[in-house]
Image 1 (tube, one colour):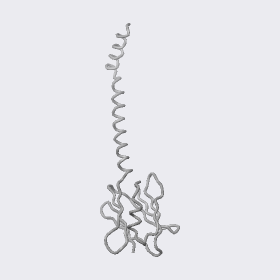
Image 2 (cartoon, one colour):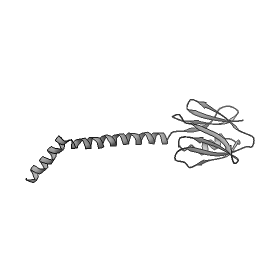
Image 3 (tube, one colour):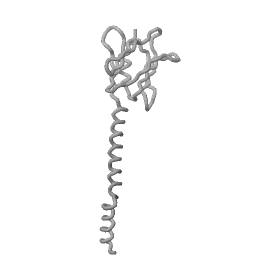
Image 4 (cartoon, rainbow, N blue to C red):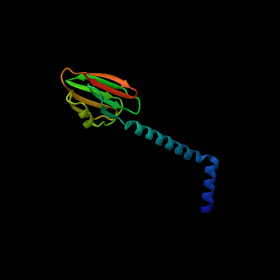
Length: 140
C-alpha cells in the first residue's frame, strides 16, 4: 500500500469508526472548562467598593456585585470583618471613611475570603445591616 492510500485508508477509518467523536469530546470539554474558568475569574475578582455612609455615624459600606456572606466579631483586641468572597478593597478609602473611630485597618491575605482586621476606639462596636447586596457597618 502506498503512502497516499495508507493515509486515505486511516482517514476513512476515523470517519467511519467514530474517531472524530474523541475530537468532539475534547472540544466540548475545553469549551466547558473555559466557561468555568471565566465564572471563577468573575467571582474571585468581585468588585467591592467601600465608602463612608452619610449621616453623623462613622460607617463603612461594602457594595458587592453578588450575594456575599459576612461575619463580624471581636477577638484578641481586634474587630474582624470576614466576607466569603475574595477581593481587595481600597484600604486607604476605608481608613478615610473610618475617621477617628477606626484607628487601623489591614487585610489578611486569603485566596478564599476577604479578611479585614481593624483596631477601633474602645467601647465602639458596629451595627451591621444589609442593603441589597451591600453590607453596612455603622460605628456608634
